[in-house]
Length: 117
Image 1 (spheres, rainbow, N blue to C red):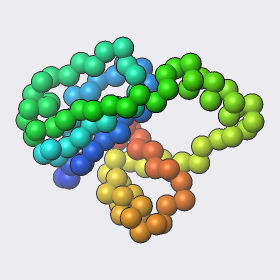
Image 2 (image 1 turned 135 degrees about the vertical axis):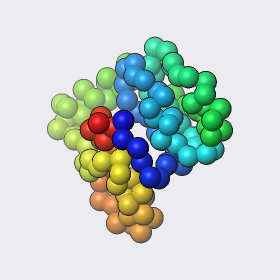
Image 3 (image 1 turned 135 degrees about the horizontal axis):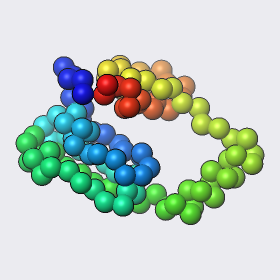
């Protein structure tokens, strides 16, 4: 995993399916917040990921798999596609600054898989 010179205030996890959580927790700064809007079968993490740095986890239920599938099928049938800008994790602060300046045309999506290599 890459070591970052800066850490994040919060992470919004929308990844579907089961995945490790400790690598994400280590990216948070002291008092950082990990927000889950996904629904994994279980959440496994080392308690030290929370205790060291006083990090927190919270979540939001976004409608479940059935409603999400219906929405995706509607979008596909009507040729509605997301407009996104994929960025590496190292660009997160610049992306945030752009958002504050109103210089954002698309939703930012952080490419975690390639950023952590």
